[in-house]
Image (cartoon, rainbow, N blue to C red; front, side, top):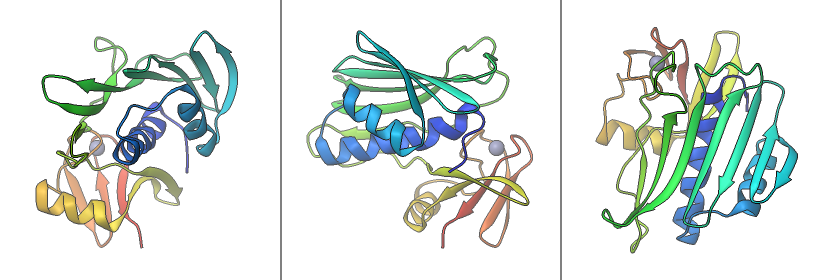
Length: 192
Ligand SMILES: [Zn+2]
């Protein structure tokens, strides 16, 4: 897994939080968030009163777990805010669902497009009600790719449009198992 820009952490993190909710039927707490960050290779550098700071070479993440919801800000370690993202998980009482969203941390300054569909999970049945295309990022000689599993790919084909970039909403051009986006520069690769 490669972690460069905030989106490269925000997407696998949202996916991990969604998997946790499907298994446990609740929003993860501080210790569980810490476990996910360790899985992703981030180092914890400060922990105080419920807030935790995690670092890796290019990224800093600030986590604010509050029981009923959790907010994780992901910022470039350069301090640049134009690509900073926020992963938010909460229980939406009106919808009767758990929601995990990726949003720009700063709407006014955000430089790109973020087209990631929210994760929506029915709070009673724990059935997914949306099918966002999430995965993790890997690098090869052609660039950085969002790597998705076959299951995610077939749900995407059934419920969405595989010619729309799941990261920015731009147009994807497929060549075999790989797709390329001219708008955000990331690609998508189907695992296996
Ligand atoms: Zn794109």
